[in-house]
Amino acid sequence: MLIKKLAAPLINEKILSQAEHVYVATAGISEPAFDFVVGRLSVKCKVELVTGLDVLTSPNVLRRIWAQFPDRVAARIYGRNFFHPNVYIFDMPYRKAIAFVGSGSFTLEGLKDHEEVFYKITDPKEIENLKSWFIGYYEFAEPLTERIIQEYEWAYPAMKQRDIVSRQEKKQFMELASHAFQWDSIRFKLQYFKKEDYLVFASDKASVQTDEMQAERLVVSNKLLHLHELIKNHVAGLKLQVETEPKQISSLDPHQHPEGRLRSQWFAYGDGNDHELLQLQVILRQKDVGVWLVSSPLKQGVEARRHFRDQMKDATYRGNFFKLLSALGAGYWMEVAGDVRPLETFPNEDALWEFTKGDDGRYFTFKIGKNYSPGDPDISTENIAPTVMKQFDKLVLLYRQMDDPLG
Image 1 (tube, rainbow, N blue to C red):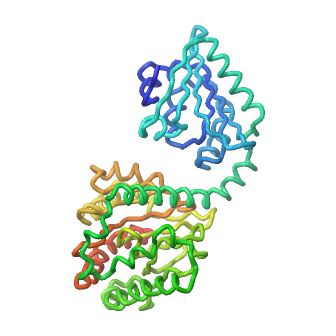
Image 2 (image 1 turned 180 degrees about the vertical axis):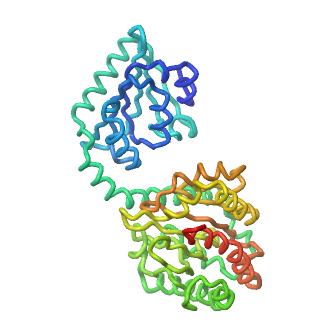
Image 3 (image 1 turned 60 degrees about the vertical axis):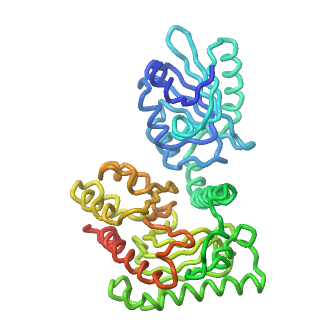
């Protein structure tokens, strides 16, 4: 029997609530999915789990399994080869068992949100074969230990950034391949950034480091710096920083960018203090110009954005922050842990709070922003400076709300 959304039978058929023992072999685990499943199991139900670390798994969920569920969940890490099965076996009352084999990993996306498929198995012989297969991998896997978790926590930030960039590049490719971007239909005559400026960031140029390529990047950099000259007096009035020049300007050297690929150029303003690193940023990419509020991840072990997270626990602060977000207007989005959502998808401050709980400043960049497509009148030569100043005036209110530990 084919199943599209595994979460449905797990709940509707009371598989989770009645399970006596669970065996999971999966490519990756997320903390929300772990809570979704384990929170519905009986406290007497034991879980044996084997996963690899090739597909991103949250370090937080590994640490929680090791520290909080030592008697209920036995987890092992298989590292001998790329591990990508997704098998779920449930021992049920009266010596019955149910298994599911499919494409979805142990994440909410894999269990219920993405387009996946599973095959339901109830034949006892087939389930015994699956258990034998599971035991083979489980016994050759390494038991989860503090040492493994620490080493993975050290490697995770770079892995996560590669994953985010990979997904962004894939999305961009699909948009371009599906003709969502018709360059020749855009009238660039009155635009501040021309077609050739955007194409500097094409995939086939991102890692090229010839004199000709650097000259193209320098043209874009000079345009960004000229835009800074147009808005710097206004920015000075926002009192984001003491200096009149941008706090940061992106490097033209691809080796200074993730994966050695230069996919964007930008400049930013902000105080640059060590506990928040909040900045207002103007960024040019292959298919848009962005005006963003950004907080970049810090080195591992530093608890970034702690004031914002703590303040969001307060209902009054949440309400005020939600009002400021709502006042931004159409086209704005928020990115938390690589997940980008339009602001209009949050019906209230509690929904927003739930989304921001996924933030972790050790690993992820936090962003609130608005993007403008090539040809948009708001980023014409005449309008781009007023547009940036107008959006900065809105974003600076959120900047101050997040930057001030007192909210």
